[in-house]
Length: 86
Image (cartoon, rainbow, N blue to C red):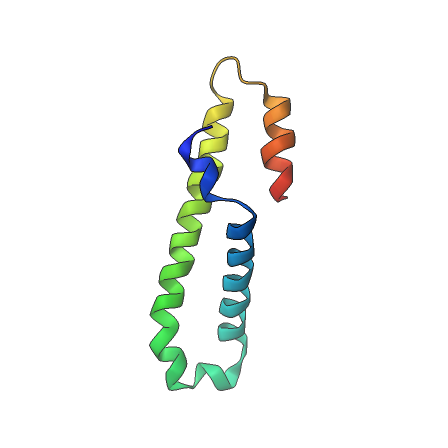
């Protein structure tokens, strides 16, 4: 398999879920929005969000580019990779 497949695994998905919860909490909680602590970590949360999006994007693009290769069994690729992360 190509190098982009190792980047998105079950541990990475768990980390994405934790980051998503933290981002939602930071956006929804009005007391937190007014705090100095959020101002300190807001840039870091945004950097992590952008990094996660770029990795997931590269992963999905890699899957679709592998589908374009001749001789690719698309049904197996769909079953093994795409349906796993629905």
